[in-house]
Image (cartoon, rainbow, N blue to C red; front, top):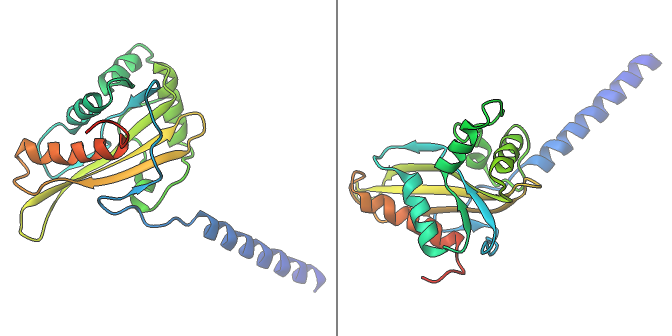
Amino acid sequence: MRGAARRTVRLLLGTSFLALVGTACQTAPPPEPGSTQGTAPDLRGRTVMVLPFQQVRGFRGTPDAELLFHLQERAGEVGWVAPDEVDEALSRAPAMDADARGLPVGAFLAGEVRRVGDPLYGQLRRLGALVDAEVVLLPVRATSRPDTTGAAVIRVEAALLALRTGRVLWYGVEEGLPGDPSDPSILASSVEALARSLLWYASP
């Protein structure tokens, strides 16, 4: 009987511990369009690795090139490392266990993330080491949805992370002008809004 009682106590304690851990790991809902999580730091003088959008659905266009254009236009004094530069660095290191695409970003779509762990963290650290970056801009997804009038709106989401710690410095969600999803200006308006939110301190 005593052994059974001890096992019951251990089981109850273990269940309580798991419940506490689960509560601690719960996250708040992700930001709505037009809002952010955290305040982006001033990136001037820093090297920032820009990765490709990890998920792109529902429209035609190249959000990676569009985003890089608006980042460089607003803050040319930042050392932006473009996605194609990351790809080139990876091609010179075939043994590197890392990839700039298909990263596990699902946690960002489920709720607020304050720090990333493995396997995403390890991938980002290795990529950052290849291009000597200290911060990474991780565009999570770009998706098209219909608005109340039936026109399309493109929503873009991205995270800014410190590569040394995996801490999420900023997370932004933006939507641009409604219209035909094949119209390049629709994508441009969304990506420009995201760049403006990230680089809040830069000139308009």
